[in-house]
Image (cartoon, rainbow, N blue to C red):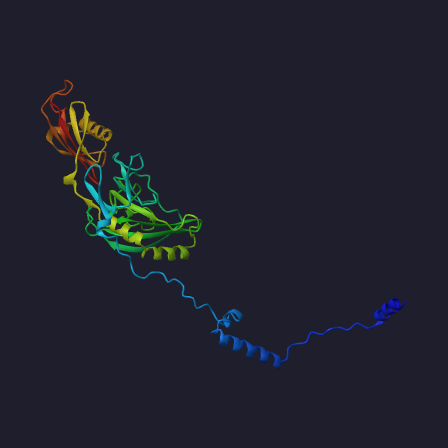
Length: 353
């Protein structure tokens, strides 16, 4: 009974409602004083944690470099010569140079290109003489931004113009950004090299690729394969930082080292009909095709030893041998020397005894 009565009484008691009491100013003052005392004893390390907005981080962020890197030391480079022997350039000792067989889009004279790979087998640059017509250009709607230019006055080309190594950024709203570098010179490419009209060297509004007359020596920098920035401002920031990297310094040195010395070229031999051909930077099939075109179509000019143009790009000095060929009268069998007017390539037809 007592237990039941106690429960009854307790249930009849009015409930007390606890009110949340705000801390008095006195209590806040005491807490603040305690906090300041603790901060003073711990070297003010607590305040930034308690009031992060009032105490921004003082950790120094890594500032982008502002001084260009210098190329690797002289002893870390090796010299590379093309198969024909008429061109050479320097690459780092841990880089690899591989010949790439020609196809219809890579060379108009059937000669190989050369890829330069770094120590991780990433293609840094490609050298092409007499490049084909299957070259890439920037997508319509792209934005082309010049990033850097370094003079290359010692690099010799066919034709006039100031030679330089240029670094360009091409961005597009719906495509990855492209940061590319290459050799250019201040001339224009003829329609034979760039069908459809003259294309400004160094990119112009087209951006990619870089043209240097009858030669390409160019490559692309890595902006990050997984998260290539498409926003122009992000890509441009990365491009401007790339200028100060060791890789770019070495790439520029390689492109600047290109030399053209045709006097060192070693001709390859081809056979056809009653002639032997010595060619430089022209494959044998192309030589035979061009030669027979000149031999048949230019018979009258051949007798006079005139300079004739064959297939728009070849200039041939044809000479009468004074011998019969296949029972035909003298003048049909001719020899001579031809050169590519706007490119790298020659061949000589020699009468076989």
